[in-house]
Amino acid sequence: MTRTVRPQKDEKPAGEAGHTNVTFMPGAAPPARRKRRSRAWIWLPVTAVLAGAGYYGWHAYVPAETTTAVITQAVVRGDIENAVTAVGTLEAVKSVDAGAQVSGQLKTLHVAIGDTVKKDQLLAEMDPATIENRIEINRAELANLQAQLDSKKAQLALKQANIARQRNLVAGNAAAQQALDQAVADLAAAEADVNATDAQIRKQQATLAGDEVDLGYTKIYAPMAGTVVSNPVKEGQTLNAVQSAPTIVTIADLSTMTVRAEVSEADVSRLKVGMEAYFTLLGQPGKRFTGKLRQIEPTPTVENNVVLYNALFDVPNPDGELMMSMSAQVFFVQAAARDVLLVPAGAVSATKDGAEVSVVTASGAKEVRKIETGIRNRVSVEVKSGLAEGDKVVVTAGSAGDVAARNARRNNRMPPMF
Image (cartoon, rainbow, N blue to C red):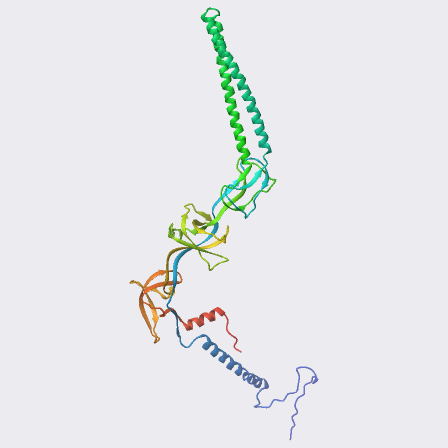
């Protein structure tokens, strides 16, 4: 008897989610596994690109071998000096304030800033009216005292004549001794009056002479020849000269200028009076103005805990191109040489026996030579023997690989790989 088996049907409708009629064939791979296998092939090109980028970066930033770079410089002839540097300010070597010695109103000012004046030239005038009135009063008082003196002298002559008579009368018993004594007393009083009046006259004469001197002070004259560099007062201004003389103008001799340089305490011991010095100006950096160190002031100035000493030297100024308060770059020369062989300071190595340098020969080989050095500064060294002009000395030796590595670190980033 034949039996037919029918597949069982789901009792739920076919349209409901999660219930479908699926027939599984034995031996067939699931579709999801085939999808994962196909995605694995996609990553193979990406892996190849990353490997190539890593290979490029390794060869770009890690050199295969290190090469040595040698920098040379030829021995040349030139000038060299070892100097102490400082910053300075220009001022007049000699200046004076012309002021008012009497109080009053400034009536007239005859000069202006920048004018050149001669010695004893009239600069300004004060109003003399007050002093002239005082002089007139003193002269009248002096005349009065002189008249009193004449009267006192007449009385003195009378007293002298009276005492002579009284002596004759007493000698002839015509007058009493008391009358003679009174005459003697009157004569002494008359002499005292004359002396007192004479003293008053001398006092008044001195007062009058002082007023006349003050009258002369109403005209202010130049105490020296030079240039008017300042004028702190104006015409019509009232000046009080009781405690101090007010400055009307300042005159400076600009034919010679003084450089006041501020030298640090670390360098001041290297300075000696009489050593050569020069300076340059901001507007003329290529021009030197020379002089000799004249003075080192013993008392320093302290600014922000920095101790500075003033070093002074004078320079001629015949053309007047140097002006007050100009800033100067100052150099105090300790040693100097002209037209000598020079090598860079970085090329010289110190040894127990002196100094030596590395020289590159014409064939390209390097050899070490001992040299005798002279003046040295931060840039160059004088060579007295051991080298010739044109020789090439090794200034510095470094690694080309190190240079590349430093450049990479300076950039601080990798270059784009794509």
